[in-house]
Image (tube, rainbow, N blue to C red; front, side):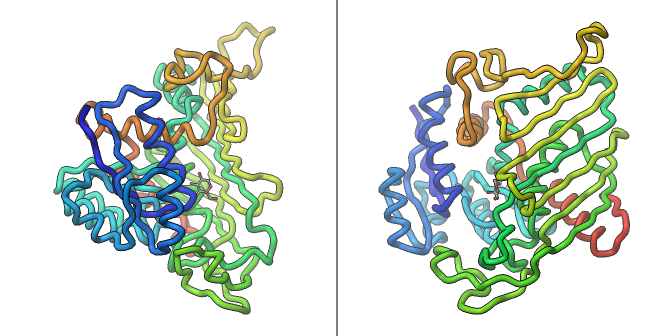
Length: 385
Ligand code: SOE
């Protein structure tokens, strides 16, 4: 079988999720090429070596430019925070490498447009890892919408809620500084929700947004707590939080539907609750990532005495991706969405089928998120061009 050598840059949360995906994809899916975990790259050598050993990366390298310049590397896996995506992706594409990139795509729409341009020019496969599209219940929602089960769609309602920074003593990590994160939940969380809205409902035309900050100053992070990634401000004492803590967007879709997006890291008790509801003329759907194997469906054509939301357990072999896993009812989890992405990406690299979301989709997401920040700043509705 053909092999594809991977160079992964980054070895924290996403480095782990991606490594697992590369290893499992060929075990559970028919893939056209065997991914080889060739080289792992990061700045802290001892942490990097421990990571590489654990996940069976053959080699390590502390200079990402050297990884990209290697002729034996086919795929660059960007498992880094967003402020590092642009430079790495541009260099990787220019060197003819296929790109598997973590979200959010970039710091700005301008960067995203340039990343797309260079990938297109160099004819490389590019994938942006909004992994939730590949949760079977969400892929099933897409299928049902395409089959017309919901009729005309009126409403989209999304909320992405977490609570990991409610404590004012939580340090000023890179996610809370504009230089490294660009924005708060508007980037990290709403990027996922906007991707799903584009996937399930369609293009967004206008955006009105409100953002707020609840805690304006936090203890500076120690070097340790930011790992190998140097936060812009570290040390003792306190520093300013320079991104928003919560964002609320209202949008109009090009197809006439309207929608809302709520994103917060201050939803006490909510750990990783990404939920959406879609209301249409013939029926409705509701999803909650904390119950990710289930899809709620209301069919307005049911006889009146039997109407009501029903729970579809998306673990039947007819449901997307499931025939590769377990018998009905044997549920899957967060990491499976990454495995599905890795399997689909390998097919895309082999030219079997195109993959989405890619940098084209990522650019559209960036435009919406940026319009949101602009709207919040100017207190005006922004039209996406
Ligand atoms: C943030 O807490 C985060 O890890 C996101 O960055 C991920 O994309 C999301 O899947 C889970 O939450």
